[in-house]
Amino acid sequence: MKKITVIIILFFITSSAFPQMGKVRGAFSNFEAGKMSKAKELIDAATEHPKSKDDPLTWLYRGQIYAGIAQNFTKELTLDKDAVEKSLEAFKKCIELDSKNEYKDQIRQGLLNLASVKYNDAVAEYNAKNYAAAGAFFEESFNISNTEDFQDTNTVYNIAVSYNLAGEKDKSIPWYAKLLELEYFKPGVFSEYANLLIEKDEIETATKVLEQGREMYPEEYSLLIAESNLFLKTEQPEKAIVTLEKVRESDSENFSINLAIATMYNVLCADTTKTEDVRLNAYEKALATYKKAIELDPDPSSSDVIFNLGAMIFNMGVYYIEIANNLPFGDDNYDAIKAKGEKFLVESLPYLEKANVLKPNNLGTLNSLKEIYLRTKDMEKFKAVNDQIKALQ
Picture 1 (cartoon, helix red, strand yellow):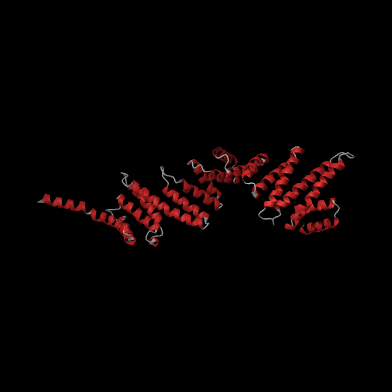
Picture 2: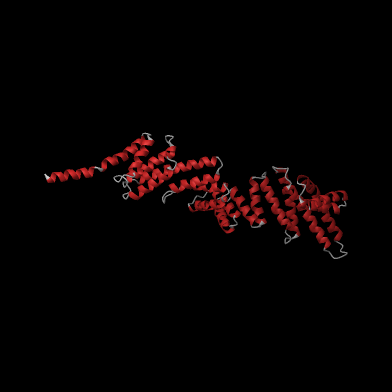
């Protein structure tokens, strides 16, 4: 008789855990039926009950239920504002308890579902042009789904681009670096990454990135632009011109490209270490390209392009006048060289006068005009410009 009693007691003790695990399954059944409030109530209780709190299935279901709340499948997101975080914690707890990896696939799918919640939040912020918030949500999505055997490169790219657009360069750069580490070799990755590095004066790294990109995509427009930016930054006008001229072959009507080419020829023209032939050749090419840029200027009310052209011509005039003034007294070449310089000054006049109309208080323009009016003996205009300068000073 005693033996029978012991058996009955043991059976009772062993089977007492089953009702509690039944509630765990009941929680999931309610979740599948769309009864989110009841599912939440049951799973919350199960994760605290001593008979079920250490079972990995409890935490798997909790992760799935809270992921469902977060995904707003039943429009009940208000059930818990921290649903994503609680779901993530539950899946991590399940991994910790699941020593046999019995639920590995379900956990993986649950994490992907959870990551999609943050991804959708990111897309909404991106479309609203809240780029910093989008970057943060994309980053959360990646961190949730990231494993040794799965790294979503598209999400990584979205993180990099979002932070870039938000102006958060320091946050953007490491994600572009990660894309190359993950062998996500798209032209835009190389060019965008390189341009960020150039802005940050990380020239050595930018050069390596561009060399790799150009080797893979030698004719890619965005990479040619990035390379020209590198040469501009490092003051290598000849190399910049070679790259920009190649770009212009496929986009000859682009204002910015023509302006950049003109600017580089202007730099060569002003370089006193170059021979006169090199400088004059650069001048002629800059002149033609500046005029082309003026034709294409999307903002003709701006004086910048016109002033730069006028200033370049004016500076050539100053160059020859200085040569004349440095000749020995009585040199036979004085008059011819001086006349050449003054010819350049006169040629710059219409551009500088137009720049003065568009932006009347620019001292650089006014001082150049003052010099020209004095040399051409136009005293009325000289006085007017001189008075304008005095008023500004």
